[in-house]
Image (cartoon, rainbow, N blue to C red; front, top):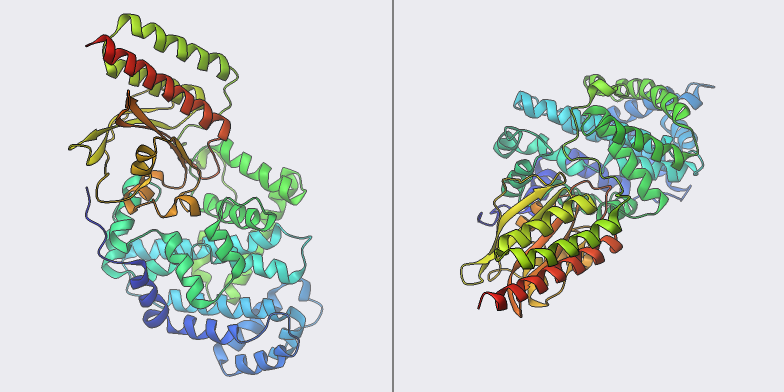
Length: 486
């Protein structure tokens, strides 16, 4: 097992918020003094902006680049504040300082610099996409959605700027979506980028909506869905992964949310890209324009890391068949392994789980270690993972101590958060997992896990109940087998 990370998330919050990016911190604190819905705040905010010549200049450039303001040129900060509204002005100021502060570091490793500029561009584009997805909302709400989507990955972006040797170590670790990258992330920063974003947003008092989006990313509220879809679309455009079918499903989901058809949506996105490039020039961030790419084609996708989950039309007959196969195996086999592997393969196939694993208790029940893992195609996966049962109160010890199958749809759920160690957070990643204790009689011998890794997929309660019942049938077979072998 890895040692616990020596560096904490708070360590990086202190570096980012208090020392390396003081302009962002001071600007965020200055803007926080002005009430969003108080018209009397506008003159005071305008006066505060005038003290920063670069900020005032940027505000005027951005104000004049916004299409619906083309009637008259905006020549003063006070006029820009009145026309745009206080929320928009605050967002422009914060965006300006973020761009200025993050691009100011010119001594970065070239690979880190590329990742920083890519992350900045994707975040900026996500903010604009969020506004575009909410035409029916008031201007203030659109601005709140812009800010939340733009800052959704602020922890990651800021880290690339100030991470130094840790950033160099992390960027050299390859695929940004890989399991090894997640493990390296925990060892270098003491957590994940989402946690870092959450703590920075709290420190800067930036957005209650953003905090909700980070805390409940799978919330069904329309506003959280807009933030989630905007972030996902922006990052998929920048780095097409998965399959083209998944991308079209994403567009279909967004079209449904916005009331557009897919053709209308793609036209709006193409138009928005042109506007994004103009705005980036106004912000003095022309270096980011190359990262705002057009919508990807089928040839741009790198292939789906995990197979797309499809409903199984024969689910219930396959479940009954598995029960029958287990019972039949009792007559022909005395090997516990064959029973466990049959159950794992069947669960993966029936419920379209990406990974199904059996963890065996070892070291006098002080730890649990993976013995077999099968993927969605029932192929064996070489995966060796070990968790302590004695030194940490985690989800495995909880399930086994309570002799209870558990379902974790989101590792940040309050019900399970206290049982999620760093290593288990890496194991669950952004997906869902179910854990079912495996017993012989009353003696626990391990646990079966089933996982999906895509954040927009979930294990249904119905599938969880069927899996728990299937593992109970396995336990019954193993118990009968132990009596038979005596």
